[in-house]
Image 1 (spheres, rainbow, N blue to C red):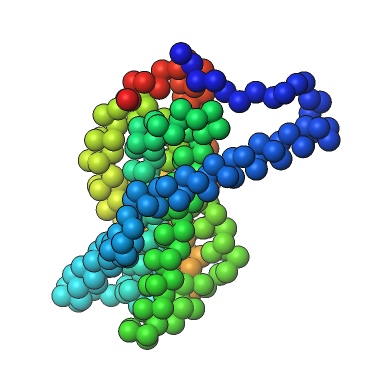
Image 2: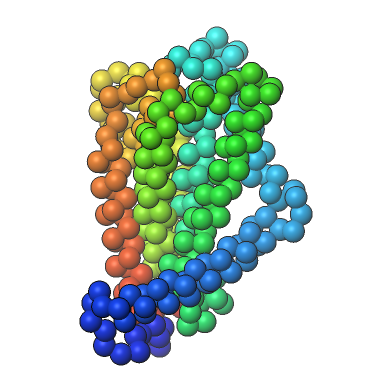
Length: 285
């Protein structure tokens, strides 16, 4: 049986006072649902101990330490004129955020089927809650890295804010790109349950091919031609260009990843609407 979708209490003239009042009420309900799901997700994902939260910091810290050690042993320096730690943090943090969110999207609905029995809870609410939790975790991790590098390695925070308006724009672009691909990942997992396993295999190579230890600007023309088909690499290059004062790349495109995100979001929404209308959600139960 199809899930009962929320319906209006009567006909409303678009953009009328009644229409806005009903829209506001729907947003209030959604906000309460999202907040409740965030609390549930935080306890489920990290547990009630500090160890669960600490792992969100330790995981990227290990990756950072490994890459810094490898570059040091090989005698390599940062290709963007910044401290090597700045170069890696500006790649590791956004990539961890993107990969983690897409992975969380793949399991969002199947892990929350019990919540979907409540008419107020929709799959989109769960996705919004998960990406907000992932975003908050990423911000905390980034701030800890910022403070740690300042006190331990004497790396000034100014290395991460070369162009403040550009940093804001690139961060919002990363959030939109991540949400679009996360929505598609969630919808694919609902019609092709094995997608979660497929993503487990695809996520890591994409992660390493997205600019964590290189920039598009420094690649040979032939290799760069292939790498520019990876929208994640464009996002990392955009973020680095905005954050690092000594780096300005002309090898990335803003339009390409934003277009990919929009297409992914639209496809995900269409699949989501079809599943809600047909009641085929049990395929992942």
